[in-house]
Length: 371
Image (cartoon, rainbow, N blue to C red; front, side):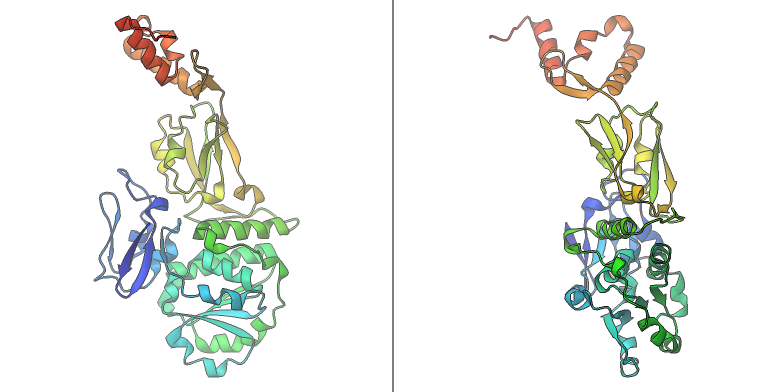
């Protein structure tokens, strides 16, 4: 992990989960697309930052689907204060709160930030799960309605409406409208189902979001499945007949949405981890994968499921499993097409790389290993 300093703010860039970093082909660059000041540039293999152009608006932090760009949380120290407080939590910029503090006498816990633009879906979800009550995003400009942090608040609000059947996230652009509604908002009864006890510091932002929302869904009986249109979530579809379980997709999935399990015999997916970057689809040599965008309120969306499976091939000499049956068959077919059946020795194809090398050497040199 490397830290990048933007002006007087410390931002953290974790390239290990960035789906753009180190790529030689198109991948996620949502932070570049959303930057209003052209401070971010998609370089050859990494995201380049012009600190002179950066205004610390936070849009890149809010929109980053993997959590690769984050700001050292300004409200971490308030976690103990918010936990089980049953108070209405108000996210507000410090300069705006100075004009309001004397008028707010209700049961309110303000979380004051230099820039509310850094807030993302995970932040709203974590505070809801801590406090167990409603959350307010306050002090916005009219133009802010299309910015990522507002969309994040609205998305979390849509989730809580479906799961808990009530309004729990509120967004205000006008101070007076907030004050007019404040009495009604603080009167909302605490929602025990919101509370999820996790140590968010042990998770990435996306992992924390998935852990909390996944628990909300588990607690809710008879929840109808709803699929939200969301650009940073997708379900991977796999053509089992085409897939040879080569593992190329899983090797490049830094969020571990795709993984090879059971001794590389099985390709599995956790849909909630997929950020819809399309890298796996681009890489698949068999064109077996496709992405279906959307965020689903279904327990299976947060659980691991099997996409494809094959049997493993064991080395005919040492007995070690070294590849999948489908991959071995594909390699044999390609070699025979390219070089002709007469030139390909089936006995070598049945050996692991180590034994194959040893066999080829002994055949051509006459050398034999002493027992």
